[in-house]
Length: 373
Image 1 (cartoon, rainbow, N blue to C red):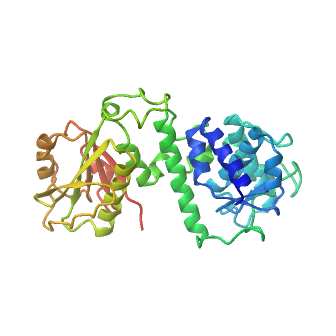
Image 2 (image 1 turned 90 degrees about the horizontal axis):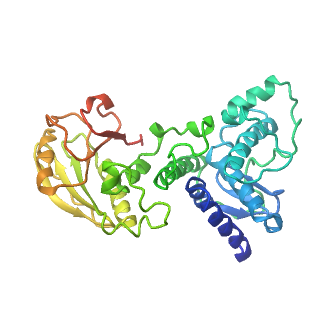
Image 3 (image 1 turned 135 degrees about the vertical axis):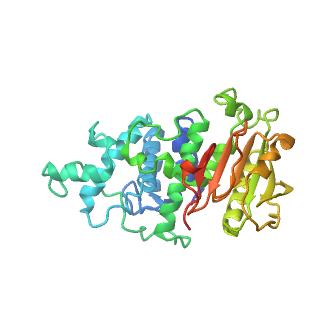
């Protein structure tokens, strides 16, 4: 990537960051690759290919709209979801939806692009069916419709070994992180554009568990008691948190029903939060019918070896709350055990591996489910 091309991309990212934390997060995730084989820009679902000469000739807002257009195609898996459908009609269906999102973000779309207030709120599969019902022949209608690529252009550098399924999963995680960042910056956290069914494909209940965990721990103590917006909007959210430290008690069920990989995944993500948000402090306990600890967690530190292996009783951990007085409690467990009779005062997040107790079985707190695999 040449310095000039890199400068164009970074400038666009900065401008979009001033408009939307949601879209800025998606652009930060995207890998932009120069290619003179694409007319202006295109995506194969993994990377976004941009013609550097065209990009350099565009006004800044037009370039921003072009890049966001392609990133949304990739983030919404429009290449992967086409299947056996006719390519040009599918591309036009996806363009109709994405152009509606780009315009809602305050950026220009091609003057020849079709707009339909009803259709652009639907899923791309529904739009494709609607275009078929209209009797539109393949290749009819707006010009373009060729930016969803079957593979990388021949002048693009080799990929880094990712396969399409892992790329799709990473885009889902990026969408989840974008929602989280949007919520922390004062947005809705689920869909910054309104009732678009395309974005509803990744409804909050299906967001990646890591994004939920980060969002839970990135709030200040005041946020848990109400709605704290003092720092957002002044650009001082992280810098002004010195006096807003948050302490978390992390409990891990070691009765034998939670495997080591789940423990490593949870503690590793907590350590990531600690590194990104210096105001967060975390103390770890293992527990079966007793509590074992405390272990102070820090970014990158070794995970203490698990202790326990007996039955499951949640009450010993809750008995420690008066001594530690944490702002939040996070408990990794399958949920099969003895709960305390009364709910604690602080927010509780139950992190449940696959096969754990159903949500309604937890008498209080939020339930977050680890993904399969």
